Length: 351
Ligand code: SF4
Image (cartoon, rainbow, N blue to C red; front, side, top):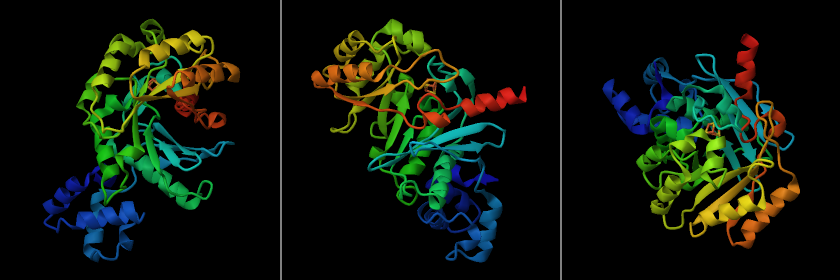
């Protein structure tokens, strides 16, 4: 059986065309499923009954099973899904003032081994298939239909910041983005999609400029410190990442985001802020400062508010665009760097 959510519109047209049926039926299916949120073929009343049966027998509409969602005190909701091979995928719905963001996962585990991140402790299990990434969005839409958050049921933004390194699962992430952007499909504009990466330059160079917004997880302003918390820095050091950024040809108004997780007494001093400024000055960018979220699986601690404010104020004083982003859902292990806890605990329980 083929997975409906893994097929681009063109591929679905080819599949249907290959059965001898009209290719335009693919567009009808896309509209029903992505636009109208109808997942039951029997309800698609502009498609002849015989064809609905054929599609039902040919196309799998649910390959990951939703588990019980967990709501945080701060309004965000962690969604979990069980894959067919008994792995857990996590995504997070994050309501903000004028937006509702869904943070999706692109891998089970991750091979980047960043020392401040729970997912990194899992190690690499496998890449998610295109349909498993798209189905996180569908799962979130189904959840919101029943339980709108703050009265909102429309996902406005998608960020690839969940479990895994998206550029390490390049093909599936790019196919997912194609499906997300399809006007007859989920119809997200590229400005509403952000890919966050440790800076796998090979992947970044393959990514067509304008595919999606880019966020680079920097987390330290000198090579040695970054290597200490992000081993990938040996292969893709800061200087190479900045070289890529300086030559990046995005749209004229596009700014790359740098993410900087503030770790108490490690990278949160004013000297660190100064080095960050020296590194990024002259680059059109935004800096997201993310105070670390503590977890069972990391020795790092959260910096106090005063330290965070001083760091932030230093950058603002230097006319950098910097925002403190307190990541959401720490009470349900849904915050930045905490995803994967359910996976680790479930595997431990099985031992
Ligand atoms: S921070 Fe991102 S890239 Fe690093 S280990 Fe965690 S999931 Fe992987």
